Image 1 (cartoon, rainbow, N blue to C red):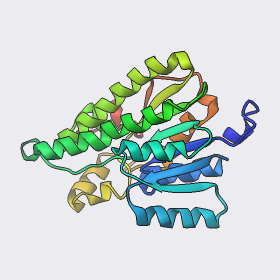
Image 2: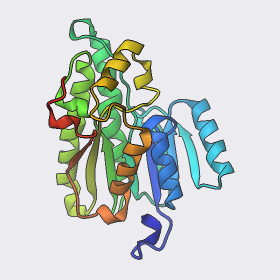
Image 3: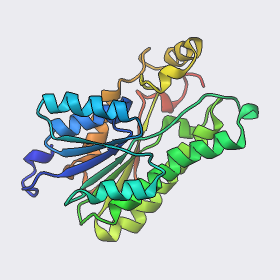
Length: 250
């Protein structure tokens, strides 16, 4: 992990959007325990306060910052507070199940803003301050492959995968790597907003009969955040227990 890599003698700094809950929160913890100084960005001020209080009590190097990922001036100010920017994890996202005929323009626009524009803003602000060896990790979704009942979410996450590849190509000459993690169905506060019957049906389709935990996903994100992943870029890794292989239903 980062603290044992002899090519990095200083503590590295990682930013995590959506860092106060779900996959983002698990990622903050794993990175901090691995020796990173972590700045968790989230729009929920109370969740940020509780998170910082908890990790401070455990003597982990974690700061909190309250901002909407679509607010470029706010993200700019947060990133500028740190002397170095080594890693940006773009984990913030929203999801509201609704069928195609029920999605409004405003629904679609807001999902794209948070899930795609928010990734672009955070990644761009970080990349402008990164030196060679910087890492950007986006969080897409297995849903990018398609599905029923969340077309706006599917579109946004497919966009994240395309954006990841484009960023990787452009940042490659600066030796900044960009990769994406595409989680399968994961037990998070966001997925728990689904009606109970829909949640149970989604779980039943999982190869292991259970959803991933946020830590299952966060450990893989931490690999891409580590200097040891420096020779991988432009890739999307599906972390879904094999469901994307097919043969298990929709």
